[in-house]
Length: 77
Image: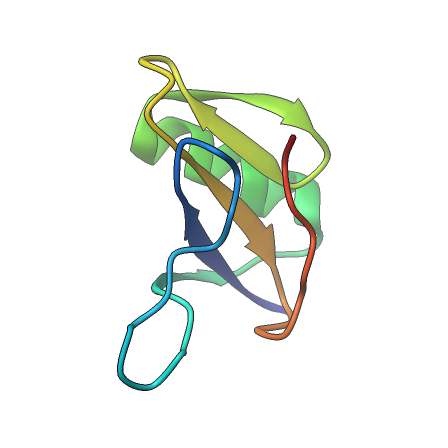
């Protein structure tokens, strides 16, 4: 399955393009499951997993939501 990482601000809200409202994301690629995709994102962005599918920056300035669904509305609080 193809996974993406949606960027989160320091409050855990998805970052979006102000004009189109689309979430700012990058494609992680094809993985067997969310655990593999999350592990890869953790390595790429030097963060730690706070819960399944959520990577938080070690500096606390934001994070990533790992998902296969661009319309995922999960927030980190």
